[in-house]
Amino acid sequence: MASSSSSSFITLVLFLLFLHFSCFFNNLNAKHIVAKSHNHQHQHKHQNQHQHTKNPSPNPKLYSAFLALQAWKRVIYSDPNNFTTDWVGPSVCNYTGVYCAPSLDDPKVKVVAGIDLNLGDIAGFLPNELGLLTDLALLHLNSNRFCGIIPITLSNLTLLYELDLSNNRFVGPFPFVVLSLPTLKYLDIRFNEFEGPLPAQLFNKTFDAIFVNNNRFSSSIPPNLGQSNVSVLVFANNRFGGCLPESIVNLADTLEELVLINTSISGCLPQQVGFLYKLRVFDVSFNQIVGPIPYSLSGLSHLEQLNLGHNEMSGIVPSGVCELPSLKNFTFSDNFFCEEEGICQNLTSKRIVFDDRHNCLPEKPLQRSKKECSAILEHPVDCFELCCPAPFKTNVTNGSVATPPASIPAAMPVSAPLLAPSYP
Image 1 (tube, rainbow, N blue to C red):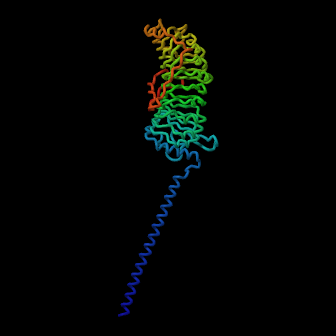
Image 2 (cartoon, rainbow, N blue to C red):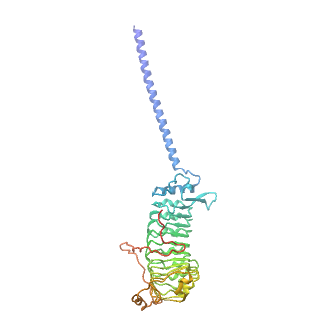
Image 3 (cartoon, helix red, strand yellow):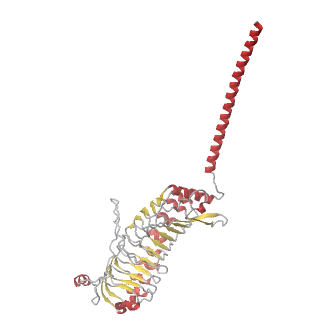
């Protein structure tokens, strides 16, 4: 009996010990599985992080472009035409508006050489990361809604040849960063909200074309204007004031188009304009220019468009100007000219489009009244004694800027349109 009871007790103890060790090993195994799972997840997470930070391309230049374009995409807030929709992944050469080409350093290496988002109607701003696009030669952002200031990091774009920021909403003073770009030849910042003076350094550069029209620039046209090698120069619809510098004669070997519509310039036209023998377009309409037409203009054999309208000029319209061999359009309306020499009286015979209204020409219709004419013609201007009026100045005390004039519709220069392109 006692032996049977003892045997039952031992059996019970062994059964309880078995249950205890079974639970212990199950818990131990569960902990091991959890720890292993945790380590696997940590490694997977670390690998994912490593994959996101690792250069996904064997080409470091394209990877830098990828970082720049992704940073740009993050600060684009409206893209109604879906220009940047496919800006996904590291294959930047397949992005809309992005153009790749062989590197100048190594033709076997492909780089982002151009970005063209013209007419995109894109809203956003330019991030500092654009400075990573060090191989960029062309940046065209015409007709968008980019705003803010131009990042100083664009100084890294040492290969940039063309920069078109026109018809956007950029603000601030003249973007000095463009003056640090050694290869830049084409600068177009028209139709923005830049303000203040134009820096004299702009004309120490070797630009081929400069478009600064339709901004809020004030002060005067820098006197070193003639230091440049520019062929196209468009200042229209700003508020400069002052006179056209005589140093412009130094542009004789290059300048083909000079457009100064509605820039508040005054004084007499310098005789030096007549030495710009390559000039094809000369438009100084809607200003306060006085005095006669310089007879030296009769030497501009390539001149096609001449617009002197809406000024306060007087004297004779010289036949030498009307006989220019390439002249197609000659506007001198809304002045105080009192006589047309020779062929100037019948420009239609030369198939020249002209406008001579609102002058003091006695034999022509639609002229000013005698009272208007006498008030000016009785006090002829002596350009040799006339001092150049002071230009408009920015009010530094309260930070205000001269109010920009309204844009003046005018004859379109050969290669320098003044009207902003409409949004799509």
